Length: 454
Image (cartoon, rainbow, N blue to C red; front, side, top):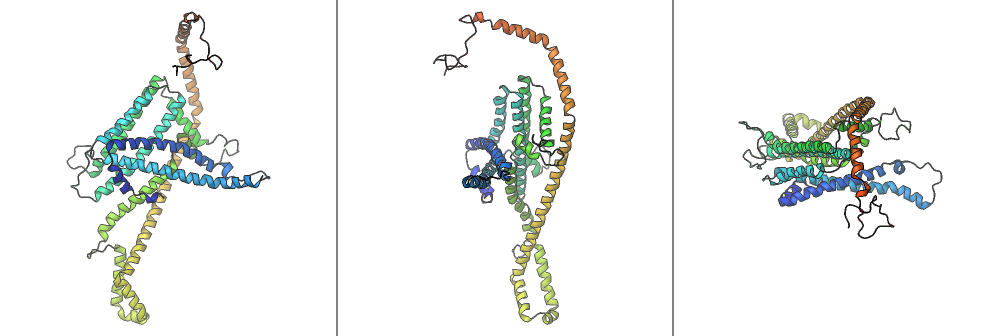
């Protein structure tokens, strides 16, 4: 169903909208992405859970209605998961196309709004109370957001490079496409990377400032981020809490879905979106060079390999006409010559060569991606094992530091307790006693229960 969405048509449809409308669309898509992540985790967990896919251990199957419900539960959850995948992939797809429009916009207005929207995060986050758990959630959100933006920008840059390679050198570029360095001869890639670097740099600067002031105002030491890494490494090594109880301590099981679930990373929708974009980009990459090399003198495009085979066959038939006439009947010779001269054989060979080329290309890409996954997975697993092995030592060091800090701050804490006792003197209240605690028995319309009277 995603193949029915044309990225080029959607790109020009979105580009025709007003700047403020696109800004609103980007914010709406960001909210929809977070909502889909929250719902999708629950749907996929319910689909792949043991109660859904596992066999029933009880002998008594119960009534026919309960048995039918157990049989229909996986099917229902499967269709719900398919609907979620379609919805979330569409949200990511529109988000990437809208970001592409913002980067390629002929005015700096939309890109400026995007960057300023990132700086609004500082105002929304810095002046709030944060616990360690809230800061961990914020860090996980920043991890996922930064990875998604990197994936979007990589696809957008590749798409722009392919499209501009087919245009003339004198094509008009947007005003945001200025060189990073004032060199005499600047390449198109250097020009195209400027808005990408601006978006990534602004995201990094905003995250650094945001986390620096959050830890400052909430009196959290920066070493807390090391503990966050330990939590993710423990998930990657140990996995789910019930793994040891099930007797699978030494089993080699990929625990990366546990980490993805903790940080809220939508791996499946993002992979579907990347595959859909690659379906459009790969033909654009290979057809541009293929069209230039395969156009014959009469203007009919054909494969060079197919043309070479058909021309060689035709020359062989002409040179060895006597031998061919003795081996093949006249009707078969006539059919072969007609197929060669009419172009049927050449078109058939051209399709066969293209199919084999695409099959080989897909296999090579799959092997490269598989090797990359194994390499990255083994590297992360080795890093996680090292962190997990030294986790207890670092916890002891942190406990000793906390004990030293408590000893150093002991006089200050005693002074604060005395000051608190002095300021909370019951004699300062209206009734000369501690304010009563309101419940449903003694509350009335104008009682000050919380910070304001509703």
